[in-house]
Image (cartoon, rainbow, N blue to C red; front, side):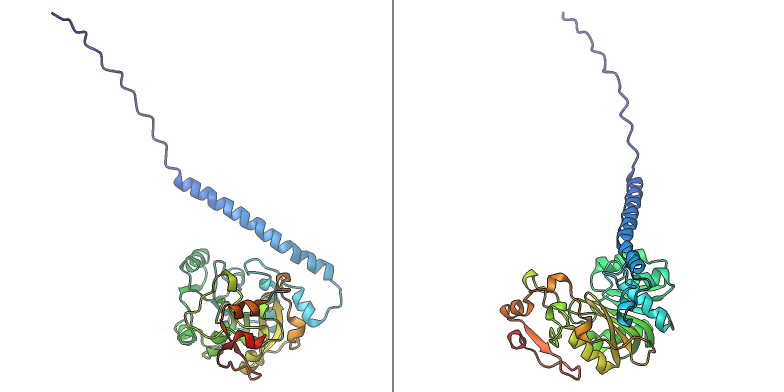
Amino acid sequence: MRLWKRRSAPPQVDPAPRKPDRTDEIIERLARVESLLEQVSYGQRILPALARRQFLDGVDLSPTAELRSHRFGLLSQNEEDGLILELFKRIGVTDRRFAEIGCGVNGGNSGFLLSECGWSGLMVDGRNACVKKVALRYGRFDVTAVRQRVTREGINSLFEEQGLTGSIDLLSLDVDGVDFFLWEALHVAQPRVVVIEYNYLFGPERSISVPYDPEFSLPDAATRSYRGASLEAMVRLGRRKGYRLVSTERINAFFLRDDVTCDLPTGEVAELFQPPANALNNDAIGRISQADLPLVVVDERGCPGEPVPAESVR
């Protein structure tokens, strides 16, 4: 007979307490860090502008240079915020309405006016992530964020749907492509100020644009210079529509409607064409020609012609 010694059951060990879900706390901390980094970024961007104003105080500047001395950038891509603010100080505001076509994630050239100056308007972008970002960022302000690829066939109906007809204070256009044709097509709204991106790689003398294509998208990296229109082409279109060039900021041109009174003279392309340093010795037309991509010549009247080989405009 075998005797079995019953083994005692192992002692019950209480399971380790579950750690509380800290997801919300982590998200909140990350938001605080993001906010702090944003404030640091703002400081880095605004300090040069403050120093510029300090050094130029009392200096006798030309009207054009004096306007440019006010430039700064908090939400704009470069230093457009300050130029736009100073322009409206000089010409006054009427309805404080804007249309921002190609708003990006920060609201383009209208974010500062919306968040700090009590403006209202429309922000449009073809990228869903950008529209979600501006809707979240500016949700408490009077703005409509729309995801849409804007075309010359649809730009007027878009403005009509949003009630942006007749005279409005500002149009900002930056779609990295067919900007020229969108401004050309717009007729239901007459902005007092137009800020529009131009392609500095096309140089100060050529009057050219990429051809119109409602599905235009940036080519591969080798031909990323294939977009937009030259400054001269934009100036010719502006004259045709009743606008005059008054300033530039790196890649954006600033136009005033002819009936808007201001002490600023009409700017000349040779004077206001101030490209970034990387534009020097950049053979954009050569690369476009090698890629066999066409261009459009804009004539003296501001009218675009038929597409031609890029080689013909070198």
